[in-house]
Image (tube, rainbow, N blue to C red; front, side, top):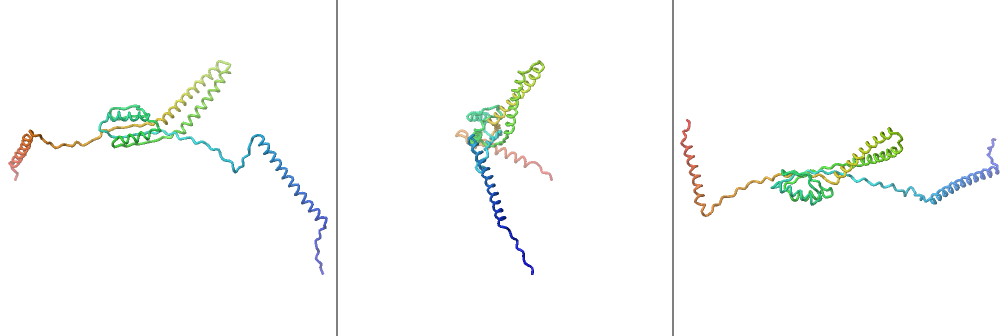
Length: 261
């Protein structure tokens, strides 16, 4: 008869295994506490240096200021008036009251105006109220990118001119001096060109262009009934009688024409 063998573990081996597990767990706890202490020391050093830690959950992205759009407005207005020249003078005075001015105008009714952008809407509304058969066409152009690009080009050119001036001071030969002065002349021309473009764009944004075409207003001529005075009635009836006699003579003449058979 076979007997089952029971696997027997000695008690001292169990005690040794339990002791090893406790030692490993205590060592891991010591390492974690050491890491935690080093982290605390690092945070304390940052605070003593004036750096305040901010948790990731509370960190906010930096707010970037959006560049306002730079728009150039152009308006074409058509309207009618009984008299053209007085209306042209009236429109110029109206533009001046809104801070604008006339670039050119003609007695035929064409006016080119410059109106501050902040007053453009109010100027057009006032002109519409004081005009007949008014119509307008408004267009806008965004020059923001062009303006920023010109600013960057200008800044780079100014930096280059500063560097060339420093090189010019350290030039030792006449040839080096002439080369640096030639480059300085080119950079100065570029700077003047970029500055002029910036002024042009700024002026175009601040002052909108308004072209007004004034046309003569057509009105039908109304014929008034003739009413003679007390002494005019005999002549009036005589005129009517002669008209009847003329019609009768013409009728008799037509009747006497022989008809073809």
